Image 1 (tube, rainbow, N blue to C red):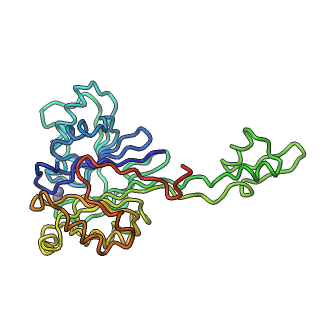
Image 2: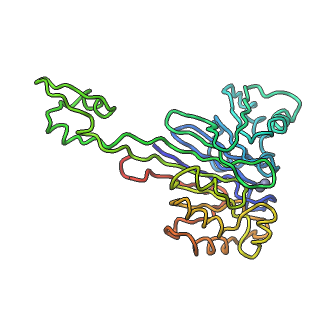
Image 3: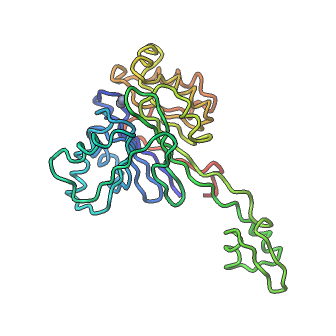
Length: 314
Ligand SMILES: [Zn+2]
Ligand SMILES: [Zn+2]
């Protein structure tokens, strides 16, 4: 089942000609999830072909570079005769501010918009096979990050062994795989443990939004497949990163190591590095414990496919 991340906007507070303000689109089995929606997000969705079928929007905080795309996006959805509801998740204490953005043009959208306030440890959205958790971040306003965490998958079914035990090919196979025991014609009972392996981990993506390095990022998901972290500054502006409640690329890599992330994507790159984010990449790779190739500073429009940890058997 494909899980694909599209970086719609990777700029810091001020956009550049190359980078749009923050927004990340996640597509999972036909479902669209949007994380932040800086100004111009709807055009980025068109440019990079994500489509507009977003069921949930997860807002990390109410700074303009993360939310000013909401009014325009909602208006386009209305022009497209959208009827499906949209849920918008936002940090505790920001409902009123978010509502004024949703109603910015004085009329309510033509489709239902539900606003859900979340805080550290809340499950913002529980889906069939995964959930999106909110976690505390350390920014200079009310803020949270989000982690998409898939449920464990069923263990691998040992087809050969099942046949050896005399289980006929057919519905009894799927019964066993679901965890039910089956009785054969000669009265033998086959238990699922005999033919189904240990549950296998699902995939997870952690998106911090703007933040200093913080412990909650490490705790929200164990060994995420992808950590998308604030890397507004390089080492030359480390003090400024602390002062303005952001992180450096190096700090992002240190957090990635502590959480055991497989891949690290650095975003929210300050406009002062317009045209060159090579130092970010180099400094993060210096400390990243995993494969250096797994650290990136995505351009707008870049896509990352997230495979299952035990890849070849989705
Ligand atoms: Zn920002
Ligand atoms: Zn901010």
